[in-house]
Length: 122
Image 1 (spheres, helix red, strand yellow):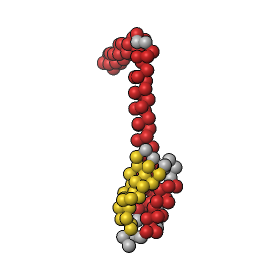
Image 2 (cartoon, one colour):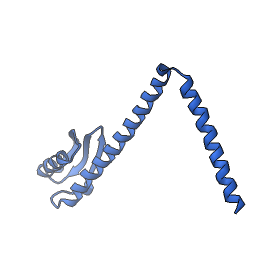
Image 3 (cartoon, helix red, strand yellow):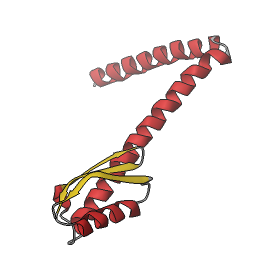
Image 4 (tube, helix red, strand yellow):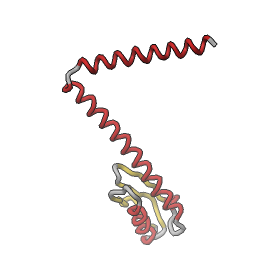
């Protein structure tokens, strides 16, 4: 019974000490000195959100390809960077290539589709 209480007390003291040291640093600095830190944090959050969005877009495009019987979805590689979807691989026909491009453009968040790497076998 005493061990968990000691661990909680130690964790609380450690968190308080760290919080106070960080707070005193932030309050001691003028607003201009804190601004670059806030901008860097916002940039990191934006990059993380973009990575999640790109991953989500890639997943949605790929799943729409696999769900469509007219597409050989397993043969199409999908990559997304800042909302731009890049398709590559080999499909059976030019019609299948155009269908893949159209399907990718339908996905929410897609800004553009680059299909230079997607070739038709015929």
